[in-house]
Image 1 (cartoon, helix red, strand yellow):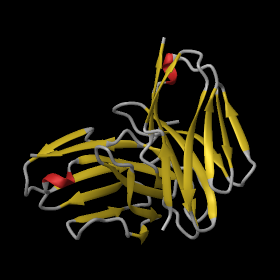
Image 2 (tube, each protein chain N blue to C red):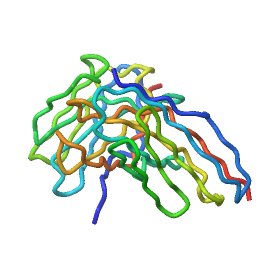
Image 3 (spheres, rainbow over the protein chains, first blue to last red):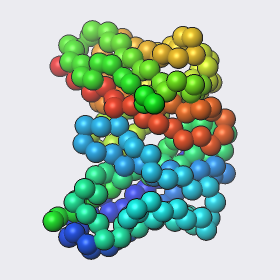
Length: 110
Length: 115
């Protein structure tokens, strides 16, 4: 059974204070690892897909990286508008479904 | 273009009543997924459709839950004889196709409250 664990559960940063969010996973035959952002009362918004270990993707202040056991979402010089819950999910084997972690709630103070 | 839409956005019902939740996927997307997000829990997979067929129903929690999709487009998730533990946000997602790694795009969700 695929499993995803995200840590920490919550993270409070000062504006401009860079940090990383962790996603550890176990999956049989990784087909893709996904990062989503979710704002309160809204559905998840797609950020990145990573397919193989060593792959990196960037978007504005965010960079996602992938190893064989975990993924990191690095946030460089965050702003208050980066405050949200960040979700990690994996798709593996013959499954089409995504298996999600519980998410990391990020709060960035001005 | 338009994203995934869901209706209603909020639904309050009494225990024992039946409810229907609707999802309208992105035009041209052949795969459609239902997930449930409970307080303090991650998103849990319920069922997915490829076209009008449901190859994976493994996440449906009981036989009170059912879903259908018609015309390869709109899907309805039905919960019969609702229980308080059914209270959650029900999220729908769609992708170009299932069977390989296609990004799933989510709707805004339906918040269900069972009193």
